[in-house]
Length: 82
Length: 201
Image (cartoon, rainbow over the protein chains, first blue to last red):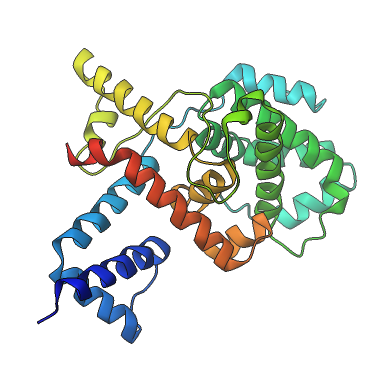
């Protein structure tokens, strides 16, 4: 059984690691250890979920299209035919 | 960024002064450049300026493109440089801090986004109430990302929003892989902390 201190130290490690390697394969022995920690630690799991949700929010954000007037100004600046 | 089938040929022709070829390159990439600039500066006017500055630079420097990197990587180098220069020139930058500090200045605003449970709120603009939620969410997202130092913001947009690889991001920004990771980590931590209340609610 892990002590609270062990868990606290490792939480720090886990959050740093997931922040850097969120989108990478976590298959090394160390990553398996961290993944195990995630399974046992609701705080780290919540942290990871929050990170994923944050990224998703920005990924799904709506982006405007290039308007006709912006397009025309661009062509004019580049001296290109419309 | 989409791949153009005959892109190397198009670039070669544009380098030789073929205006039509250059025009096709502009047409192919203008929405990518504009979209990226908007995601970084969160402002349509600034995105339009960045779009124009970028393609003017592309035109001027086209003969320097040697084809070793992908054209899109080279284009991203120019647009990210423009974003950084614009940021430096801006008086609003005074409130910004150094590259690796998570605390810093603000900029402009507009647009917004959504997430797993929030996605439908953004995409389905059905009622005035939904629109209010969308506007509120946009403001929250914009305010948070605009507080990030530009260097971290660009890494976050390239990696997490545009889905560019670590390697390409490092090439675009001429940074080492650990430097990209470090900036990305800081950006993620910062944004998550700023959105915590919203995420938890």
